[in-house]
Amino acid sequence: MAQNDTSITRRQFGALTTLAALSATSTSHAAPEGPKITKLGTIDVDLVETTPVVFNGKVYRYEYVREKYKPNTTGDSYSRFVDHETGEATPAFAQGYHLGSAAVDGDLAIVTAVDIWDGEKVDIFVSRDLKTWESWNALNLPGYGMFNTSLCRDPEGYVLMFEVGKPKEVAGNRFTARFARSKDLKTWTLTAPECVYAKNRYTAPHCLRYVDGYYYDFYLESMKGGYAQSVVRSKDLIEWEQTPIHPFLMWGDEDKRIANPKLTEEQRKHIAASENRNNSDFDYCEFEGKLIINYSWGNQRGLEFLAEARYDGTEKKFLAALFP
Image 1 (cartoon, rainbow, N blue to C red):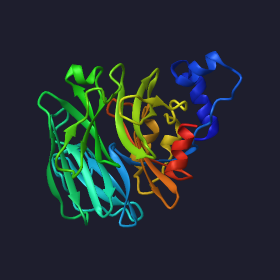
Image 2: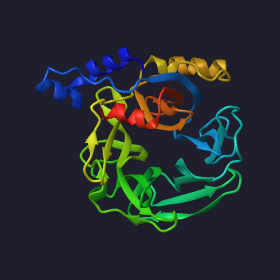
Image 3: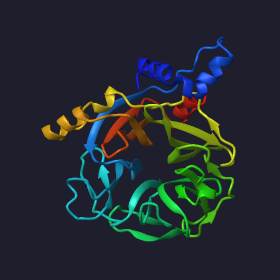
Image 4: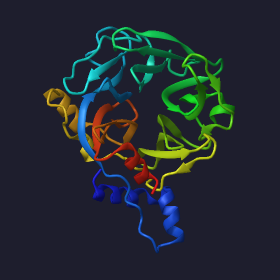
């Protein structure tokens, strides 16, 4: 996002942001600029949940392919990885699973997904070649309604963030981050009930990272006019600090740029004419000192597009810019 776009964002939404609260009490310091994210534009239509990863030295984009995705003729949802350079897709797997996300741990590709939207189960799929997959159940929580997931490693093992819509006493307002831990990817334990973000408002989680002692939850914030990306960090999954660059990514005309030359004329017209009030489902990987970013734009009411962006710097530099 260009600097002038970021300043417009703050003027438009300043009344809703932490930054505005700070400026209301002190005008002696300039507002932090935050990381400069360059939006490249739209790369596909009707794809939302994706995760860029580096696997065996190559960049791939994990994709959760929904039933309504027009090229999907299988009649069911599935997952796949797409070679970022060539566009070649791996064989489909995890048929019938939803809202997946991916992580890489050494030579192991890991995908977590729910069996149904608003369901009680999260399963794990692992592979060392992106062709053959082993799977098992990670969470089975009667009475829960789960959606998006994201996995990372910390010094103690693996941490899974999962989005909950129910029960009320766990979720509060729907779409809240909850957490579980495992040392081996197979046996999972829920963290303490206070390990959530955040029950008091809409804070739909999507991407979890652990860097230098902090957990980072990249989530979707509901605000006047639409939905935009923000991030919080925590050392214990209980107490959270919000970035002063809030939101750090929001909708704009750059989302509708054409970044995929293979998009048809019909798709291009659809992109140009569609309502845009959302930047969601932010995820990224670091490759050769830069971040490759994917996110979704649209209207949160059925119009959904997949876009790509760049950050010219490392993950640590990016996070430091979000928390100056």
